[in-house]
Length: 190
Image 1 (cartoon, rainbow, N blue to C red):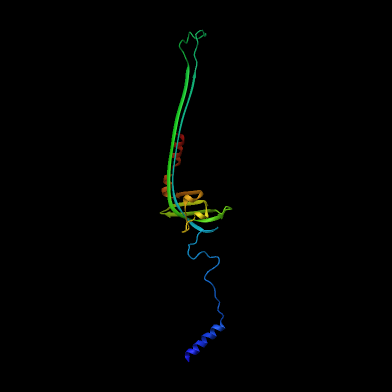
Image 2 (image 1 turned 180 degrees about the vertical axis):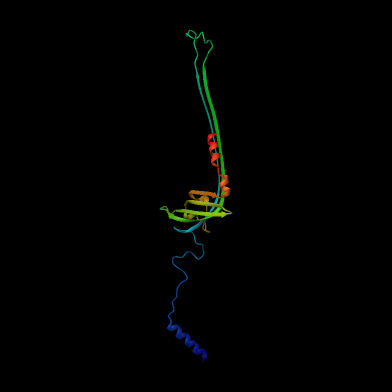
């Protein structure tokens, strides 16, 4: 009998309070089986930076100049300056060589700041790190294609177009690596 009373009470409660059902699936959601990938303005993704650059330039210049004349017999002053053959010559050689290499490896999270008419994304990001008073900053800008974004929401720096990666530092060590005004002046003079 007590079971019947409890059952009737539950039925009365269910009838008096309307039940509302809703789905766990939202129509604007991505797949349940994939990670979210950057798709539009304001979305974030990680750029894996692996850049090695080497540049080599060599220049070589050679110039020459000459001037000469002879005094022919029978000229008025030829007897006074017999055997005199004025000559002028000028020669210059110069050469130069420049060699430079650099490497940067790391990761930086960037933001999609614009979706271009082509469907590509313009991205920008800044990452600053300060250790013992030394501040280092990586700044990256470029253009990416949506299809180049990996499933884990990363992209390699080699896949970026119009990429600009700058790596700067400031602090005691960076200041010591800059030339002083006296060094600059002496190098300019000499």
